[in-house]
Image 1 (cartoon, helix red, strand yellow):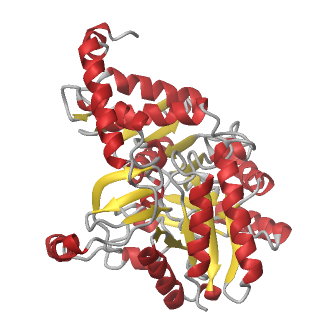
Image 2 (cartoon, rainbow, N blue to C red; image 1 turned 30 degrees about the vertical axis):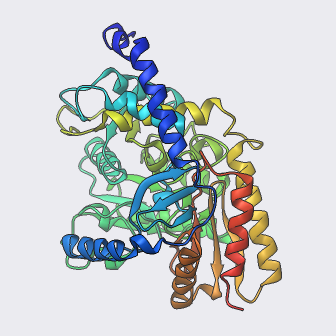
Length: 453
């Protein structure tokens, strides 16, 4: 559908002139962000005060002493203390890049619309564009937009439980992470996230694929799945799967492993729910289930983070009754415009495929980490993961030494994070829309320099 009313303004020559001038001005302002830089002493006192204020205001401190100036350039971000750092964690996977001219232009086109937020009652035509694109690209019938990955997962669970009523249980993998809402805290396999919370959902866990013992781990998962189904017949709303475990430590499964479980579930009419909040846009395919060749077996999928706007995608057979999923906010007009831009970039500009930018940058980073591991086998093991999801184990996964290491990296100008539990790992989620080969080369130098002598 052509939005001729808005296009009369959006494509107005005077507006286009102003837009290009604004983008060029901001582009010039960020052009100096080309390397790591220490804090500027002129700003450090005010910065320390701001960090103290935010701790008091929100009731807890920040993981890193990180407050951005709002200026970024590709893989670089400048903090409010004047320092410049490499962002190699991307807000735990949410940032396409920093300061892209094309992204800025997309966001401005969203920002000039008449409302900040779009929602269930009133949506703009950009929502239709995004919904149709997600449905077409996924091969699923419907897409429901929402504000966060947790809400996308919540909506998926509601759809599944209504479809499978009176089912009361859910199947998931050990070490999974699905969110921190009241229900999802009981799916996420980490007991400390639900301390003091009432029971809301009964989850039975299956062991994930073990690359060191492929046949044994597969058979163990199948046997336990069949045991659960026999013990609780018709009680399961679905099997919820991360295909590459994110918070769990970047462990990929295999098609044969997933298919073995899917076949058992399908024989008992148990739907397959794929959680792609972290994997979306980070493999050689747009969706990880396409990478694993599972597209003919998926019933419901959630996406988020890199997609900018989160969504629950599902087939017509699971169509919920009116009123089950509905939200005042589905996202901002700016985020929806940005989401369309990210989809265009991923699908049209050479990011996908084994020879695409995602795998190219991934291979360069992985090769560099392998070289470091060969030089420092006493400290570094790995790398692990797939595509844009990369991790390595430092200091045998010792939590104290690994935490100290990632903080040294931060002080040296490279922002990373952790994942896994036993062992704890160092995690990278590069801003794939802006990271360059040179960026990766320089970050790898810092990664090695910050290891203990």
